[in-house]
Length: 214
Ligand SMILES: NC(=O)c1ccc[n+]([C@@H]2O[C@H](COP(=O)([O-])OP(=O)(O)OC[C@H]3O[C@@H](n4cnc5c(N)ncnc54)[C@H](OP(=O)(O)O)[C@@H]3O)[C@@H](O)[C@H]2O)c1
Image 1 (cartoon, rainbow, N blue to C red):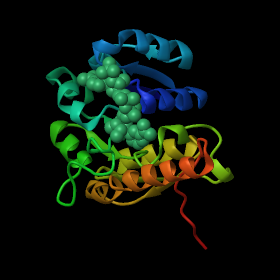
Image 2 (cartoon, rainbow, N blue to C red):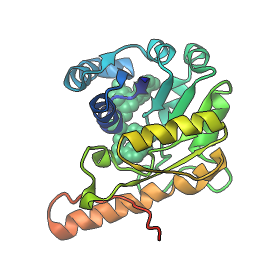
Image 3 (spheres, rainbow, N blue to C red):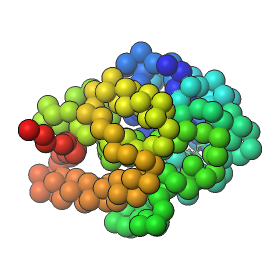
Image 4 (cartoon, helix red, strand yellow):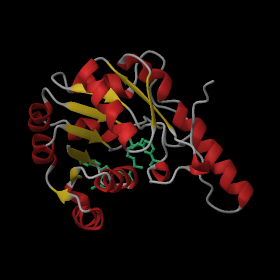
């Protein structure tokens, strides 16, 4: 599948690596401030660098991997038009500066606000409960990590569920996009657990969420 990844930082570059490993065609973009890093990430992952509107126009599915505060700048009229009728996967978490809180929640979510900015697109919340370091081919403890998927368009959600499964995750449909309100706080807990685990072990420890079933 043709995938555009907007944001070539920790999460976007790790996602590009994983998607390329699975055989997808990947285009990455970021703000012009990071041009050299974009070229480095593209060279390292085998993705192509491109301006955001061109990357989104060429893709069937776009992964929005920028800080939530950058979404307004990303959603130019060109990008809104390029994303119309397509799948936009929102991985953002509206973290506060202390990374222990969210700037919005309860009555809305980053995903719903992004859907509002991209009225013609099928926005799906997914992958936001993974740490960037979980985006590898080897999951911690050998378990398949949970990827809850929320969205209002059934076809878009099916495509994202299939992609998450293909990338090696335990993809679970968690209902409409409003469910993002309950997914976005998860990362705060996970960051705290990861930090505590790293501190206790004196090294970087791999942790991630899994769903037990009987
Ligand atoms: N890191 C994680 O473990 C993790 C886990 C789950 C979800 N997330 C979410 O993933 C998103 C990205 O996180 P990150 O850790 O990858 O952050 P990051 O390392 O700071 O990377 C952010 C990227 O967004 C780009 N960007 C900023 N403004 C842009 C614009 N207007 N147009 C295009 N690109 C733009 C930045 O490019 P410039 O440097 O050029 O501005 C940079 O490449 C966040 O919303 C975060 O909550 C992250």
